[in-house]
Image (tube, rainbow, N blue to C red; front, side):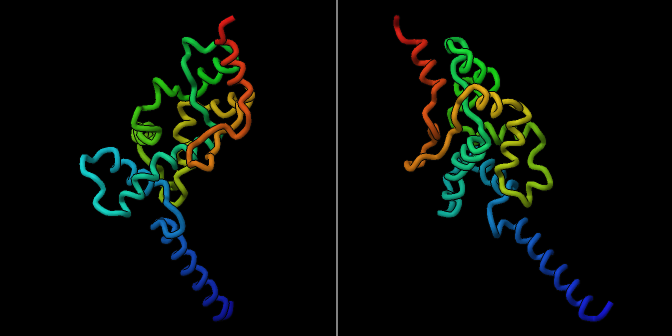
Length: 184
């Protein structure tokens, strides 16, 4: 091995080390650990945000949670006692319920609670974006939500131009549920 090969290998090791440290520090994107720490703080403090950066970070907790889950194919179930169609009942049984599972404060509060019960972020979450961590945690409780949604014809939820989430295509099972409730 020549001196140039040793220098190149050393250079690659330095670059890899800096890149790993940069990922861990969140230079390129917010890591799962950073998301967890920020969002945990936002729901467990009685004080308002101390800085503009903190206010901005706290404001991203709920949209990040929704984006991660909805991109993964999650939907929220409805009222298990009054839903009539088989498609809606299947989603109600397989997915988080918007009335009984999701706190009024938002899905991010539920995500933090589920993560805490699961022992918190894992080692890889210090380097990876939060989406995988959030979805992994929800999949432990509702492993079939996305596949049941797709199998029953519900479209994915997607962020709309106004920033809110809505159906990415017409929701035929929703129309069938509304028709089932219509007076005859």
